Length: 195
Ligand code: HEM
Image (cartoon, rainbow, N blue to C red; front, top):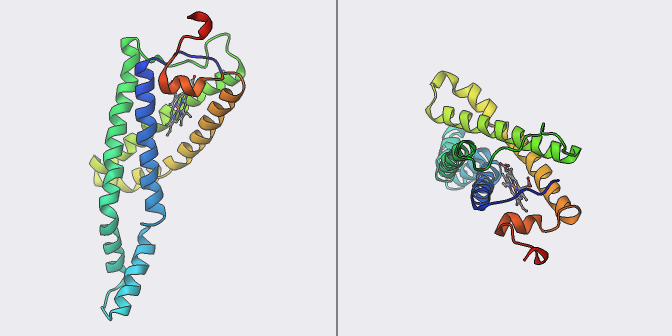
């Protein structure tokens, strides 16, 4: 890994994106676990049977989706917020800020080249997730199913990215770039020798 300067804009965009994406991950986690529609429908069915209320599976699933809906609304709001940060991040290089680090630039070691390549792939795939998410909400009904099938695949690259990113960052912190994590949090402090 190579040391790059982290100005205020870089850190602000980075942490906005990181926090919003983490919260988004929480909504996905909830949808797949506690609020999974068939598990909730099972609870509804069991309660209805206990109370001798007649309810069929479709009705129980519909109710389960209604229970999940307010939580899932956060997923959609977070998606809009991430889209705004993403667009901002894409526009910033036009104003000379947060230029993309090219993996093709000469003089890079293999690790740094790979690191910059992973960032670019991440941004392309995030762009695809955001586009498919927006198409689910605003696109034509005929596209809904296909676009949703693509959108749900997002979790795979995101988790892979997080493993690579956090692994890479902690490894660099412990080996070649001590202080890296502190710099991305509070900025580039002048070292004692340069004071
Ligand atoms: C959901 C969580 C996160 C996401 C989506 C994320 C995303 C990113 C992206 C896209 C970049 C490249 C920025 C650019 O060049 O445009 C980056 C850089 C960086 N991130 Fe994260 N990040 C996350 C969490 C974290 C955490 C928890 C840490 C610290 C422990 C961290 C430390 C860093 C550092 C040090 C860099 C700069 C590395 C370099 O010199 O290139 N990130 N992150």
